[in-house]
Amino acid sequence: MPQFFPNPTSGAVEIKLDQPMHYQWLKVYNMQGSLRHEEHSKGSEGLRSFDIRSLPTGIYLVQLFDGQQLVSQRLVKE
Image (cartoon, rainbow, N blue to C red):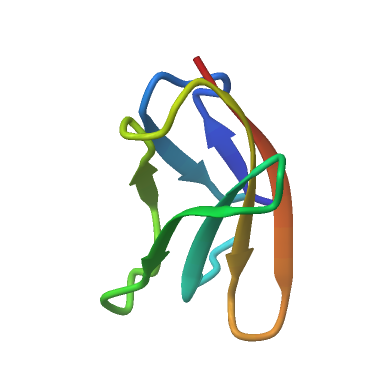
């Protein structure tokens, strides 16, 4: 399962993986279910980090998709 570091964060977030995976896309939703941020993989490395500095302080749900499996985790923006 991926982990986000740091969490809570003030902007830039790294995706820590316990096994190699190639995430195709990442979506960040606020607690009301609105999509607030989206990124797609641009190469064979997959997603390794993302930046949510433009989002307001709050709690978000981050979803990662690798083509087969969807992973969701909570992220706190300070």
